[in-house]
Length: 412
Image (cartoon, rainbow, N blue to C red; front, side, top):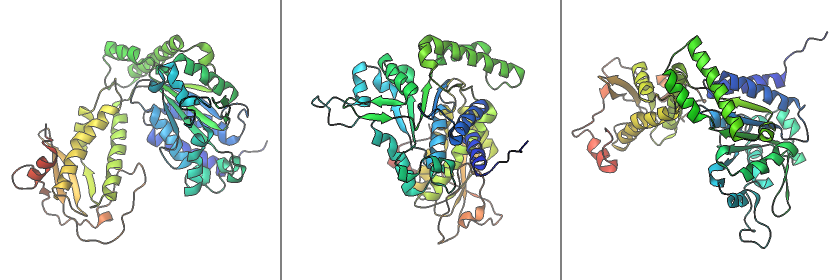
């Protein structure tokens, strides 16, 4: 028997799974199943007459379905936005489907290129080749070997978001794409979907899940009870999906993946990612500064941003309101300057912003990798003199009056 050894392709697959685990938090089953599907893609043993991958993501809002697609795009093309998104809410009426397929020559709108035109799907691959970004452009990349630039066959990702809100006529259009991998537009042009990763997301079953969560009074419970609740939720969502979508439609997918609810530890990890994103933005602004958030402040943010029915979206709003908006005011009032270390804490239930002034420096700013949550104070020349940190003023003549004049009160 020959022992199989992991090579370059295996390394790419491990990096892909690591990236999925890092960005799609709290969905280990989804991460494993998507990685399995991706392995079939890069192994090249998929059905050549069908799309490369076809997946439907089910589950409540705010738990990572669209984030998964962004992660796919970032890994493959090096850009989180490198996919064609079809917002199915815009196609609840059958006549709007002409935006997807185009109008026949001579009809109104016949000169407008449809959303599903081949060049619109392929543009992200072409941009990745130009920028030399993502797995598709890496040396010895399996995807690069499958889709060499000289072959003029380009990989693409297509997302049909909230597909349950589309008119059933659109579902019929998707049946042909999922089964045959080709689509004929209104002007008789043929679009090739055999090199497409097609993802559909749906919030079907959200109401059932919300009732189930309320009945079980679930918050951040752990252990066997929480696992059983998650299993019950998955079963409930699958039953609802079978009620909404025809069986022949659901059977066209390579995988149906149901996303579970987020637990407290998941929200802390998501919060760390959001803070890392704010820090990267802080390093790229006109007056770069460092950011440090205490564990007490994180606990307060998670407490205010917790809603099992809406996933991580309330947390994102709380972060924008409690952190980003005040920091923006402090920047506008020139209380935060180049090289400062801004420390955010909680005192008697209120967020407190302090800073440690930085020193003058002329070096270039280094953008930190995604997911980084810790930074050295010397990154921007900040020095700790061991003295008391300066608390930024919230009233009086410390500059906040200027901020309030610009945008009004933000302490409500």
